Amino acid sequence: MPRRVYRVCRARYARLDGAGARRAGGRWNSPGRAVVYMAESVSLAVLENLVHMSRQDFPTGYVCVAAVLPDGIAIATEQDIRRRANPRQQASSQTLGDFWFDSGETAVLEVASAVLPNEHNYLLNPSHPDFARIVADPPALFHFDSRLFS
Image 1 (cartoon, one colour):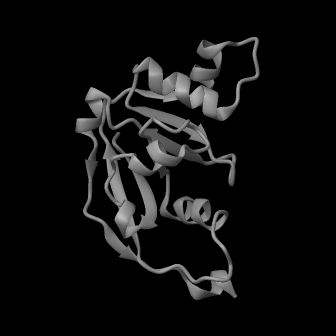
Image 2: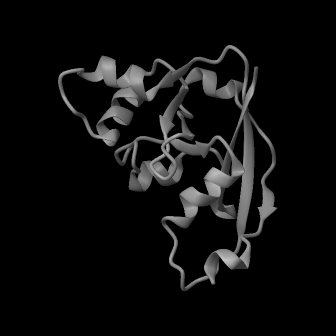
């Protein structure tokens, strides 16, 4: 069954090209690797943003981008990568993500959210050939509820 994944971000980062993560790196990738971070639900995508936001500035100019991971697309899991990377070594999430990216095995990696460990984020590799099978909806305006910042 196809899986929908979501990204809540400033409009200028709505393109699913991984350019921001390539420039700055992220929890699951070192700088130089273009990775798109998405979540299994809009609410998780919001929470993933909230943990990085300043409470002084109300966020504006955000959009939500949904994408469909089609049936049959291979999805690696965090556990798969941990086993293959080096099962005797406790590698950082960034090292594991780099291992996944560099292996080129799949266009998608499913990882546990650090904010809600029982929910999942999805890393997409735009340079993988299967990435072209992932269909994104046009960005939709997203407004944060002001009560989140009171």
